[in-house]
Amino acid sequence: MAEYRAYLVSVDGHIVGFEPMVCVNDEEAIERAGRLLEGGSIELWSGARLVIRLPEATTSK
Image (cartoon, rainbow, N blue to C red; front, side, top):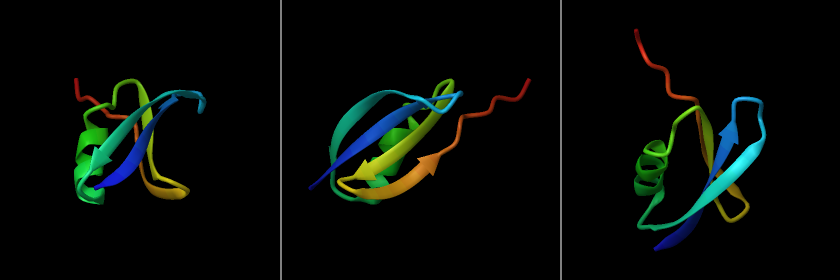
């Protein structure tokens, strides 16, 4: 199990919060972090390692 932090980044680029997570691997962490997207983006970190940046979710109208 590895520790991760999903940082919530506002549309203007500021970190507005984070969600700590413990996951089996990067794939599980990425999937869980993706559920947090709403009105900004997510930076997923494992310690000092950036795992992925998830862009703002887009919705079709």
